[in-house]
Each structure stands twice: as C-alpha cells, then as structure tokens.
Length: 441
Image 1 (tube, rainbow, N blue to C red):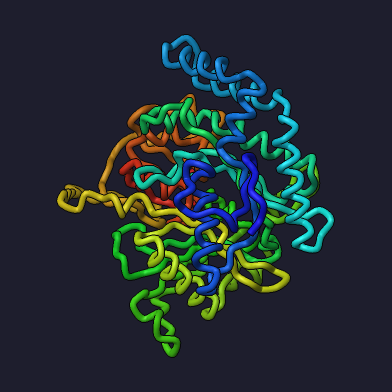
Image 2 (cartoon, rainbow, N blue to C red):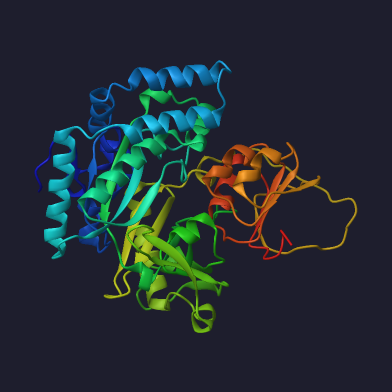
C-alpha cells in the first residue's frame, strides 16, 4: 500500500466506492487493480489527484466566485457559451499550483518512475469528473486526455489543463443538459504509466452488442497505435465479435466474426512540443488484423470477468504494448445506452418509396429519418449548422456535441461502432451511419 495524502492517492488504494474522491474513471482503475489483478486482468499502475486537491486549487487562487459569476452571466444570456468557457479556462491556466499539491504530484510521479525503472516515465494524464460515469450519463470525452507526457513540469501543466477542461464548451453544455450543478462537480486527474501501444495496438471493447443490446457477445474494435483514433472515430478499425457463454471452455474459440478495417493512419509518440502525431499505416498494416485469435479471446475473457465483477455491461479501453506484447485494460466504465433502454417501447418505421443508394456504412440506432443534408467539414464551422438537418462530416469529437443534439441524424466518413459519433448518437437517440468512407465527397 502507498502513502495517501489529501491531494494524491494511488490506484492501489482506491475502490469504486471512491467516486466522490477521484471520479468514476480513477475509482474504477483502482477497483480493477485491487479486485481483478489476481484474476489476470492487467491494469497499468498510477495515481490520482483528489477532488479536495481541485477545490484547494480553486480556493488558493480565489477563483470560485469568478467561475460562479461567469456561469450565472451565461445562463442569464449576458455571455455566449464560447466566451464563458474561454474565460473560465483562462482562470485555471493563469492560476498557480498550491505548493503542497504540486509537491504531492511530483513526489508520486517520481515514485512511479522509480517503479518503472526510468528517470522520467511517460504517462497518460486523464480527467475524471466526480459526477462522471454515473449510470445515466457517459461523459464520453467531455474532459481532456493528454498522452505521452514526460517530466515534472510537463505533468503539472497537463494536470492544470485537465482542471481547465472541466469548463470546455462541450462539458458546460453537457452538464447543463443533464442538470448537474457546475459548482458541485469537481475534477480528479488520473496519472497512469503509458503502455507502448504507439508501436503496438489499442482500441475499445464492450461486453454487450452496442446496437441490439444482445448481452451474450463481446464487441472489440482495434487499430494500430494509440487508442485515441478509435475513440474519436478517426480510423475505420478492425471489429471482432465473440460469443460470451462459451468463453469459460479453454478448448473452444468462440469468435463469431472478424472484419478487417481500413486503419489508414496510426497515432504514435511525437516530440515534447507535440507529444503525439498521426502517420500513415503501411500496406501490410492495413491488410493485417491487429489482434491474433488468442489475444481476442484473452480480452473477451477479461471483458466477461470485469462485467461479472461490476454486475453490469461495461465499456472498456484496452492497449497492447509493442515491446512486451502484453495486453492491458486502461479504462472501464458502465455501458450507458443499452443498459438503460426502455424495452417496453417498440417503434416501427415504413419506407414508402425506395431511392438510389448513395452510401453504405455501419448503421447506428434503430430509427428512419429523412431530411436536408448539412455538410460541416470543420468544427470551426459548426455555427453554420441548420437545426433539424442531417449532419454530414468526416468524424466527430466532443466539440461537436452541441450541434449533434440539434441534428435529425448523423453521417460520417470514418469510425466504427465504438467511436465517439456512434456512442453519442446512441445516447441522444439519433440514427447514424458511420465509416461510409465518402460521405463528405
């Protein structure tokens, strides 16, 4: 067991009951390390700042009142969402670290580096809001993540940017929609040793069919390099489906389907100024499956183990280290759409006349929509979106959520069934087609 301070706590000392202290993401990592490590589920080590550290940062810099006033001005219509978000984020970025908090973060980072046998260990720095991962909201990507952060100065800067990201436009908008009090949501920062998936592979995994809610399958999406491209829908990943009830028999290989995705790019480590960057994949990488059958089955068994432990369908992120070949679970949270679905309501739709097939892709949701197309190729242009039209774009990230809420349907060039566009469309109850390849052309 590690020493726990008011500012920092190690994953080893956390359980899922610690959501108020470190948010859903970090408490879940602690829960898996403590409870599932002995069952073979590997989770990279790390630590988290506490919600107390967040409030201490705010009060030491005396910005609580300014944040509250900015939010009040926005809700009263005196300022725009973008003006409000930018003003609050600047309050955080211009603030100074309280000495005790900075010292606790640096001390824990040095300890993590010693444990890894490196002078400056590379870490992933992730935000975890204390209202995050509640069963009725996914908070998918509402706050920021920073990958391949190396060194104490860079770490403190990334942690401060995580605090500021509690007030991105999309996060403010999402909390307002869900009825969360902005001044009662804190932010914990998770600092986790990086898995060298930049030279390996990574992706997303669900312990349920994301479309039908069929609970007897594991769905895995996989791509080369770091996992952000799969999450954001920037690549068309491999997709594997496994039949859960037969996973307990080691003599069987219950892989139902394997689809090889385009995987045209991969995210790798960059420089200190730009810690990650995308590069094209090779012809061989595009043609090959990211995971072997043995790896697909290992991940699927882990998914079943994690689901059994939590007692609900789970949404997980995994990574494979390119040096060691070892697989890791880097995040796990309850699945939020199919689990909460109203099963008593059945809607049917009828297409009265059939037109020309323009595109094909992965269908998301279970509705039929017709309407005008609104092509938006860059997040900078979302102000031009026409309410009630069908949003067509290359890919979405959390900055797009405010207009996704106003769309009748969504069509993207890239992404799989576990991409941001797919997850948010399901949560909003919107039909979508992802991974069409040529929608914007």
